[in-house]
Length: 78
Image 1 (tube, rainbow, N blue to C red):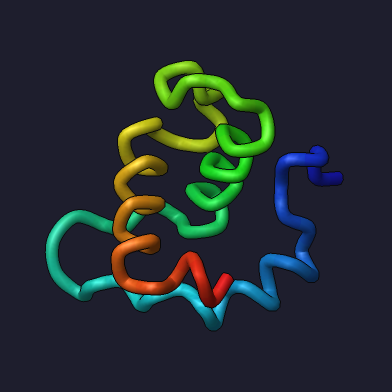
Image 2: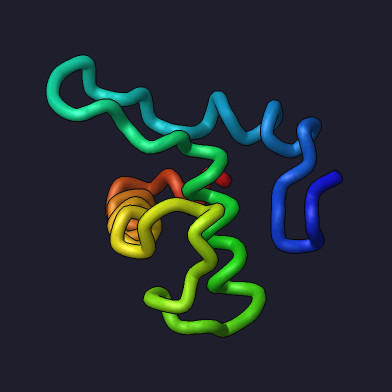
């Protein structure tokens, strides 16, 4: 069962089509749902990015993804 800072399966299913597709080249992309849960954790708890629990992936990945999603309008769609 997800914690209050994590997406449920139903929420994840609704949000998934709104997220940009991963690029086919280069390093494998970190899982969007895990990264989004990390972003939500920081926004809801107010913790520092470097204090993000490891279950959400690397803090810089979450921060960079949030910045990119804000810049390209994805965050507004979500």
